[in-house]
Length: 372
Image (cartoon, rainbow, N blue to C red; front, side):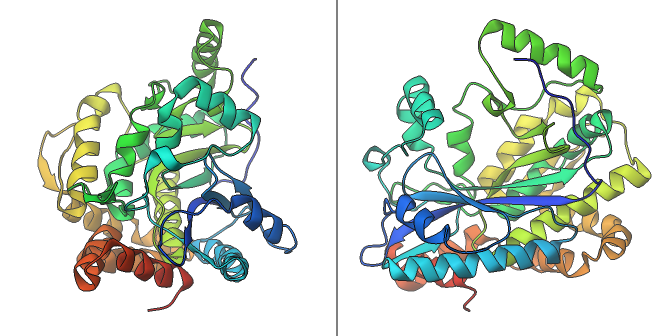
């Protein structure tokens, strides 16, 4: 199957997808209610979409095409409110976070959809272990070559995205000591990691043609890269975010991506090169393991720096672009989060406060509802 043409989109427009947990309200474990939720949500007139995901205790919501983080938050808010109302009718709850803290992967059911069944046959138990929850952010690009350049510039900021969204410290009932343990499950897939370093669409087309001739891939969906082009939308899609605990954080993260993209398009602050990836995996690990406390290495100067300090310095650089885009509130939200605590830290605090993982999930449910 040939790679489709890169469609036109308005530069810097946004689209956000959130994978969400469905949990019981009696024991706070995952609940296989995706079909029931989809049936109820189909009766609502809402922006974007609500669709099934790999296993039956998760669903994915998405916005339409948005122009600002406030627009993203408005659409997510409408969908969130409808989700909460539908979940209440089923005596279940919807919650954010990158992992469920104590669910057992072998108890999960693959959602009955041809693509999910095919993936289960190919990847075996990894498919059930893929009951993890992420946020994807699409940003519009003026053309295909610009999209590839933006992709590789964005790759330097993958540790920022991970640390700012980290919300998966607990897996199978244990504190993993990672702020984002979710990504360890993603890295197990053979077509995960970074995109190949090509800067024009003709070369990317040639790469895609070689990969399809091997029989390993059939479409762009088969690549689980941290960032991938989405030619049908005219965007690049950033895939490393954990699902945040609140829609406010999700919208703010989209605003961060949009402000970075505006900075790249208007100032071209650096040229992406293959050597940017010398420290890519190490920096990504630091962000997953230590979150905002991580130490990353600059790919050109080899200088080691605090991830927290690097994010704050980047926020200052992007401030003029944030103002032009109407993203000031979103960037301030992230600045406050950097100085206070990530969602991963919040979850650990809730575990200590409640003395149980169940109490922690209940606190996360209230946070998703928008309650203090």
